[in-house]
Image (cartoon, rainbow, N blue to C red; front, side):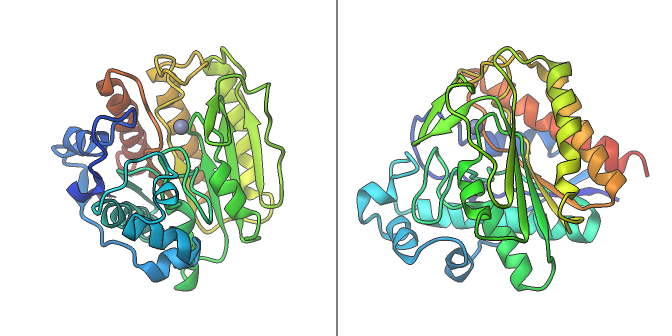
Length: 310
Ligand SMILES: [Zn+2]
């Protein structure tokens, strides 16, 4: 068996010179392309009907038309006519990966999950919340009844938490080291805390957190994904921004620590027999090759866990 993952050149919206290195989607695909243990597949875009299960009509229209401009750029990208098709395609990648995971146990979209995107606006470089859009589409198709989102991006997954609140069939767990409030990241997680709410929970990684502390917190938190019953699918935000070199990261985590994080997450899913699909999430280290290395290591951990061991 090969690992089937999703990427398309159209994932890249033309956002110019931006702190979000959107070219990383292509760089990760290029780094993985020659590995005979995986196949890279182009997904189909999701439709406006798919978006409407999660986002308001006014917000979707703003992304499509650019008006009102403040709403169309609420995610902090410069609006262009190419934005709407690119985010439909990245969300389509998340959906395709989630569906593939149901069929084959594991998959990925080499795109972000967009965990800051809320029902009626975008935030933090996240336009539409591909995680919830994908889960809603699979549920509408009768493929899943319950699902979990494990968010290990550096930042708190505020958009996913807000969308989970009204969906009792989703449980979202955010394990974060940089708080996030009103579209601004805060390095000190002790200054602003996000309490758990209906269908979402959190765990924090304190400033200076090292690998063994992060892994202990992760191991303790993982069983929470099973609390309300076994989910039919786990979506995993495997962020590259917890890396110590990242400008937003107050954590003391290196490549080996994040690789071990990914191994533990995949081992948990495999042991529980729950399909898992991952997405790239954030990563802003100035040397983009460092970001790409974290993401290719996630693929390595998945191959080790699900492909090599067969
Ligand atoms: Zn982030």
